[in-house]
Length: 218
Image (cartoon, rainbow, N blue to C red; front, side, top):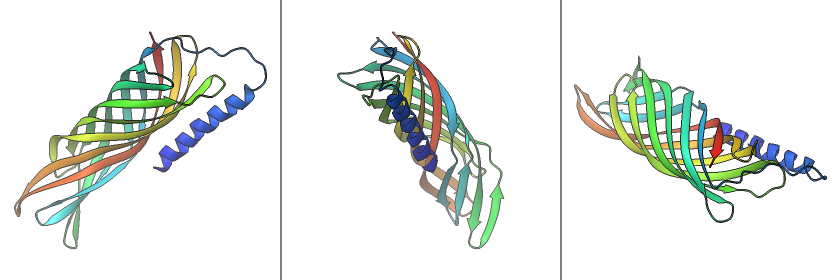
């Protein structure tokens, strides 16, 4: 969460500084003259901690910081609003610690991999200058493949995200952008089978991250 807040504040501060500099007479900034776009972005996803129970004990899991990519098709709406359909993929190294009473044992896992499909809505904050800050939110579904040492399974989950960023137009059809996201994936339902029996549990994977990318208008 601190990564999300810090990146969001930095993006908005950058936008405010650029707007202040443009208060004096200057050449008119280039602005996209299109209503639809496609975008591609890549970046960082922060660490995710989670836990769930099994018959006789609990698992404390950790998905390390990793990489993410996102692609989207978007369209401008009335006013400063826009909406997009997006696909994303993120991968993180995963592992866990099993706790049974006072006994703990580390488990060597592999990865947490999430493939998501989302609908995102944005509001482009109207400011002067070439840098345009924006905020947004999204909802979608995800396929989650997790191997943390105890479970190795694939399931589905709901995705929610909060977004803050800024973009700059470099031509009438091309813009660069940077944004921070706080992403929640869950509940993820799992079923564990041990010598003590079967147990159904659920948990969330929540992380802050950052993306940089390019939009192509048409």
